[in-house]
Length: 171
Image (cartoon, rainbow, N blue to C red; front, side, top):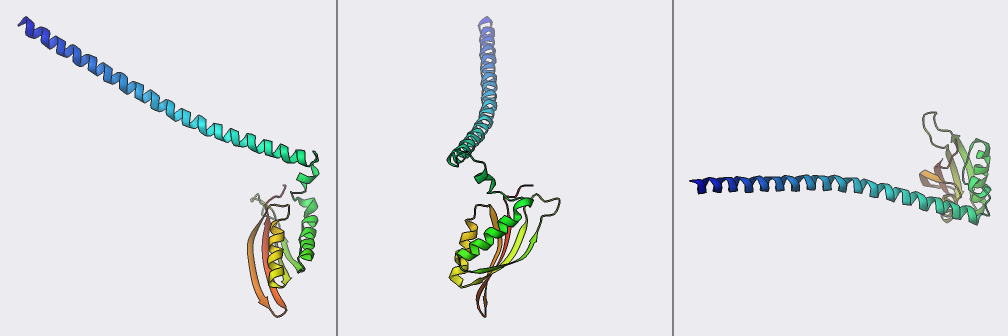
């Protein structure tokens, strides 16, 4: 009988040790899972910081190539005082592409929107010239979005109806 009782105690002791071991494994696994989540967040933050550092070094490289002059970088942005310069650049680009351009309208964004002005204009000329003009205005030093480009056959050749939004606008 005493032998049987010590056997039961031994089984209970082994079961308690196994439960404690399984509890320890569960606790250890949950802690590791939590740390893995934190490591993932830190890695994402690290990637973002590395991207910011690359952007800053790229900006410094561009500023260094421009001789440190801020003027070249400022010319890539349009504000209220130099909207005329943007329109003149559109017209000069039209002359370079041998097309005629007529600005129909320029509208500022509403007060709630933080976006630049929208220009609607029509360019006239040959199809190849108009296509070249479209490529040239996309390569102007401004960040623009061509919201609408429509080629229309007219009696005197082709017309290109454009709607362009200036994205690099300083408020």
